[in-house]
Image (cartoon, rainbow, N blue to C red; front, side, top):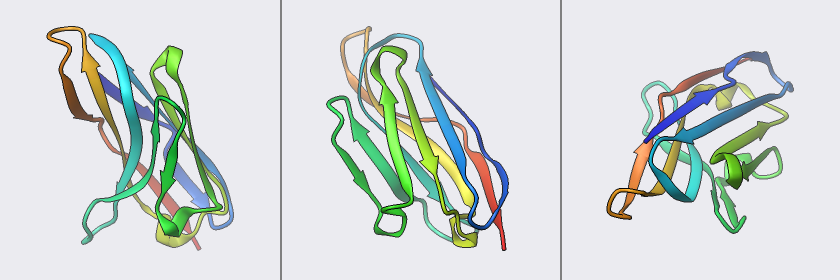
Length: 120
């Protein structure tokens, strides 16, 4: 299973970015998918997560500004980030709990990070 993230970049404060993460390879179902971020010198933290049924949860710091969504048919999760702040600057990582076609085991996977930089 691979998670391929894209969409990071440099944006001014108040701007928007949209991250995408596509899961592929040996997937029976993606139980839940989400985004985490890690700023320099800080621990990785949850940004948002969404289940296959559409239930979501967000970090308090992004509520009202970020929206997570998914396309179950494409095993893809999106993160729409609006009203970005300099403190949102971090490497953003895609994460998913996936039931694989081999053994039908649920395994947690991480994608490669994508850098988001918000300038003031």
